[in-house]
Length: 221
Image 1 (cartoon, rainbow, N blue to C red):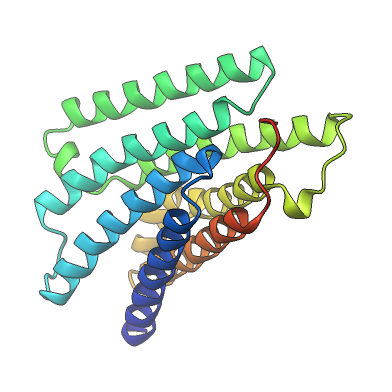
Image 2 (cartoon, rainbow, N blue to C red):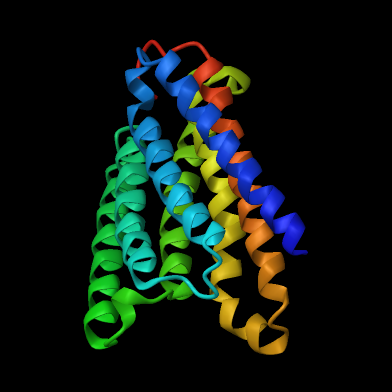
Protein backbone atom coordinates (compact mmCIF):
# COMPACT_ATOMS: atom_id res chain seq x y z
CA UNK A 1 0.00 0.00 0.00
CA UNK A 2 2.82 2.40 0.89
CA UNK A 3 4.57 1.70 -2.43
CA UNK A 4 1.33 2.34 -4.30
CA UNK A 5 0.88 5.64 -2.48
CA UNK A 6 4.47 6.68 -3.27
CA UNK A 7 4.06 5.88 -6.95
CA UNK A 8 0.77 7.72 -7.31
CA UNK A 9 2.09 10.76 -5.38
CA UNK A 10 5.02 11.15 -7.77
CA UNK A 11 2.79 10.41 -10.77
CA UNK A 12 0.42 13.15 -9.65
CA UNK A 13 3.32 15.58 -9.26
CA UNK A 14 4.59 14.71 -12.74
CA UNK A 15 1.14 15.24 -14.29
CA UNK A 16 0.84 18.59 -12.51
CA UNK A 17 4.20 19.67 -13.92
CA UNK A 18 3.10 18.67 -17.43
CA UNK A 19 -0.17 20.60 -16.98
CA UNK A 20 1.75 23.69 -15.90
CA UNK A 21 4.15 23.39 -18.84
CA UNK A 22 1.14 23.30 -21.15
CA UNK A 23 -0.26 26.40 -19.44
CA UNK A 24 3.04 28.16 -20.18
CA UNK A 25 3.12 26.96 -23.78
CA UNK A 26 -0.46 28.18 -24.25
CA UNK A 27 0.09 31.33 -22.18
CA UNK A 28 -2.01 33.33 -24.63
CA UNK A 29 -5.05 31.54 -23.20
CA UNK A 30 -5.98 34.37 -20.85
CA UNK A 31 -9.38 32.74 -20.31
CA UNK A 32 -7.61 29.99 -18.34
CA UNK A 33 -5.36 32.27 -16.32
CA UNK A 34 -7.00 31.30 -13.00
CA UNK A 35 -6.42 27.65 -13.83
CA UNK A 36 -2.76 28.34 -14.52
CA UNK A 37 -2.40 29.92 -11.08
CA UNK A 38 -4.31 27.03 -9.52
CA UNK A 39 -1.98 24.48 -11.11
CA UNK A 40 1.02 26.45 -9.84
CA UNK A 41 -0.49 26.54 -6.35
CA UNK A 42 -0.98 22.76 -6.32
CA UNK A 43 2.60 22.23 -7.50
CA UNK A 44 3.90 24.33 -4.59
CA UNK A 45 1.83 22.31 -2.11
CA UNK A 46 2.87 19.01 -3.73
CA UNK A 47 6.53 20.03 -3.57
CA UNK A 48 6.19 20.73 0.15
CA UNK A 49 4.37 17.42 0.67
CA UNK A 50 7.00 15.42 -1.17
CA UNK A 51 9.85 17.21 0.61
CA UNK A 52 8.54 16.33 4.07
CA UNK A 53 7.61 12.84 2.85
CA UNK A 54 11.18 12.20 1.73
CA UNK A 55 12.41 13.48 5.10
CA UNK A 56 10.42 10.62 6.67
CA UNK A 57 8.23 12.69 8.97
CA UNK A 58 5.73 10.48 10.82
CA UNK A 59 3.24 13.37 11.06
CA UNK A 60 2.78 16.54 9.07
CA UNK A 61 4.96 19.38 10.44
CA UNK A 62 3.06 22.40 11.71
CA UNK A 63 4.42 24.68 8.99
CA UNK A 64 3.18 22.29 6.31
CA UNK A 65 -0.36 22.32 7.66
CA UNK A 66 -0.36 26.10 8.04
CA UNK A 67 0.58 26.43 4.37
CA UNK A 68 -2.16 23.98 3.38
CA UNK A 69 -4.78 25.89 5.36
CA UNK A 70 -3.79 29.12 3.65
CA UNK A 71 -3.76 27.30 0.31
CA UNK A 72 -7.37 26.18 0.81
CA UNK A 73 -8.43 29.84 0.89
CA UNK A 74 -6.43 30.57 -2.26
CA UNK A 75 -7.81 27.45 -3.92
CA UNK A 76 -11.49 28.32 -3.50
CA UNK A 77 -10.74 31.95 -4.42
CA UNK A 78 -9.16 31.02 -7.76
CA UNK A 79 -11.86 28.49 -8.65
CA UNK A 80 -14.65 30.88 -7.67
CA UNK A 81 -13.07 33.62 -9.77
CA UNK A 82 -12.96 31.25 -12.73
CA UNK A 83 -16.60 30.19 -12.36
CA UNK A 84 -18.06 33.54 -11.29
CA UNK A 85 -17.25 35.31 -14.57
CA UNK A 86 -18.79 32.45 -16.55
CA UNK A 87 -22.02 32.06 -14.60
CA UNK A 88 -24.64 34.53 -15.81
CA UNK A 89 -27.52 34.10 -13.35
CA UNK A 90 -27.56 36.81 -10.69
CA UNK A 91 -29.10 34.35 -8.22
CA UNK A 92 -26.31 31.84 -8.80
CA UNK A 93 -23.68 34.57 -8.49
CA UNK A 94 -25.19 35.83 -5.26
CA UNK A 95 -25.23 32.27 -3.94
CA UNK A 96 -21.52 31.99 -4.69
CA UNK A 97 -20.81 35.20 -2.78
CA UNK A 98 -22.76 33.83 0.19
CA UNK A 99 -20.96 30.47 0.02
CA UNK A 100 -17.58 32.20 -0.08
CA UNK A 101 -18.39 34.38 2.92
CA UNK A 102 -19.68 31.37 4.87
CA UNK A 103 -16.52 29.43 4.10
CA UNK A 104 -14.23 32.26 5.19
CA UNK A 105 -16.23 32.77 8.38
CA UNK A 106 -16.24 29.02 9.09
CA UNK A 107 -12.47 28.80 8.70
CA UNK A 108 -11.97 31.87 10.85
CA UNK A 109 -14.23 30.60 13.64
CA UNK A 110 -12.67 27.13 13.67
CA UNK A 111 -9.11 28.47 13.54
CA UNK A 112 -9.77 31.01 16.30
CA UNK A 113 -11.93 28.93 18.67
CA UNK A 114 -9.87 25.76 18.25
CA UNK A 115 -6.47 26.60 19.74
CA UNK A 116 -4.55 24.38 17.32
CA UNK A 117 -7.05 24.56 14.45
CA UNK A 118 -4.91 26.71 12.20
CA UNK A 119 -1.91 24.46 12.79
CA UNK A 120 -3.61 21.11 12.23
CA UNK A 121 -5.46 19.09 9.63
CA UNK A 122 -9.25 19.52 9.84
CA UNK A 123 -10.84 17.42 7.07
CA UNK A 124 -14.31 18.90 7.58
CA UNK A 125 -13.04 22.29 6.39
CA UNK A 126 -11.89 20.67 3.15
CA UNK A 127 -15.24 18.90 2.94
CA UNK A 128 -17.08 22.22 3.22
CA UNK A 129 -14.76 23.76 0.64
CA UNK A 130 -15.39 20.88 -1.75
CA UNK A 131 -19.15 21.19 -1.30
CA UNK A 132 -19.06 24.93 -1.95
CA UNK A 133 -17.06 24.32 -5.14
CA UNK A 134 -19.23 21.45 -6.36
CA UNK A 135 -22.45 23.50 -6.22
CA UNK A 136 -21.21 26.38 -8.48
CA UNK A 137 -19.91 23.77 -10.93
CA UNK A 138 -23.45 22.43 -11.13
CA UNK A 139 -24.72 26.00 -11.58
CA UNK A 140 -22.49 26.48 -14.62
CA UNK A 141 -23.30 23.11 -16.18
CA UNK A 142 -27.01 23.77 -15.64
CA UNK A 143 -26.73 27.09 -17.47
CA UNK A 144 -24.84 25.49 -20.34
CA UNK A 145 -27.40 22.70 -20.75
CA UNK A 146 -30.32 25.16 -20.57
CA UNK A 147 -28.71 27.63 -22.96
CA UNK A 148 -29.81 27.96 -26.59
CA UNK A 149 -26.21 28.57 -27.64
CA UNK A 150 -24.86 25.75 -29.75
CA UNK A 151 -21.66 24.43 -28.21
CA UNK A 152 -19.42 21.49 -28.93
CA UNK A 153 -18.94 20.40 -25.33
CA UNK A 154 -16.09 18.09 -26.30
CA UNK A 155 -14.02 21.11 -27.34
CA UNK A 156 -15.31 23.76 -24.93
CA UNK A 157 -12.49 24.49 -22.50
CA UNK A 158 -14.75 26.08 -19.86
CA UNK A 159 -17.05 23.07 -19.80
CA UNK A 160 -14.16 20.59 -19.64
CA UNK A 161 -12.47 22.42 -16.75
CA UNK A 162 -15.76 22.65 -14.86
CA UNK A 163 -16.45 18.95 -15.35
CA UNK A 164 -12.96 18.16 -14.07
CA UNK A 165 -13.53 20.31 -10.98
CA UNK A 166 -16.95 18.77 -10.43
CA UNK A 167 -15.55 15.24 -10.63
CA UNK A 168 -12.63 15.89 -8.28
CA UNK A 169 -14.48 17.79 -5.59
CA UNK A 170 -17.64 15.67 -5.71
CA UNK A 171 -15.50 12.60 -4.99
CA UNK A 172 -13.15 14.14 -2.42
CA UNK A 173 -15.90 15.95 -0.46
CA UNK A 174 -17.56 12.83 1.04
CA UNK A 175 -14.08 11.43 1.70
CA UNK A 176 -13.23 14.41 3.89
CA UNK A 177 -16.58 14.44 5.70
CA UNK A 178 -16.21 10.75 6.56
CA UNK A 179 -12.48 11.00 7.37
CA UNK A 180 -12.68 10.64 11.17
CA UNK A 181 -15.42 8.01 11.06
CA UNK A 182 -13.48 5.81 8.68
CA UNK A 183 -10.28 6.37 10.64
CA UNK A 184 -11.88 5.10 13.85
CA UNK A 185 -13.38 2.12 12.04
CA UNK A 186 -10.14 1.23 10.27
CA UNK A 187 -7.05 3.49 10.47
CA UNK A 188 -5.53 1.80 7.44
CA UNK A 189 -8.49 2.84 5.29
CA UNK A 190 -7.24 6.44 5.35
CA UNK A 191 -4.44 5.42 2.99
CA UNK A 192 -7.09 4.26 0.51
CA UNK A 193 -8.86 7.62 0.80
CA UNK A 194 -5.59 9.46 0.19
CA UNK A 195 -4.82 7.37 -2.88
CA UNK A 196 -8.38 7.88 -4.13
CA UNK A 197 -8.11 11.66 -3.76
CA UNK A 198 -4.73 11.78 -5.51
CA UNK A 199 -6.01 9.62 -8.38
CA UNK A 200 -8.99 11.95 -8.86
CA UNK A 201 -6.59 14.91 -8.75
CA UNK A 202 -4.62 13.37 -11.61
CA UNK A 203 -7.83 13.20 -13.65
CA UNK A 204 -8.48 16.87 -12.78
CA UNK A 205 -5.08 17.86 -14.17
CA UNK A 206 -5.74 15.82 -17.30
CA UNK A 207 -8.94 17.82 -17.79
CA UNK A 208 -6.86 21.00 -17.52
CA UNK A 209 -4.50 19.74 -20.21
CA UNK A 210 -7.45 18.83 -22.40
CA UNK A 211 -8.87 22.34 -21.91
CA UNK A 212 -5.62 23.97 -23.05
CA UNK A 213 -5.74 21.93 -26.24
CA UNK A 214 -9.23 23.21 -27.04
CA UNK A 215 -9.70 26.26 -29.27
CA UNK A 216 -10.01 29.51 -27.37
CA UNK A 217 -13.64 30.61 -26.96
CA UNK A 218 -14.74 33.60 -29.02
CA UNK A 219 -16.52 34.94 -25.96
CA UNK A 220 -16.95 33.91 -22.34
CA UNK A 221 -19.81 31.51 -21.90
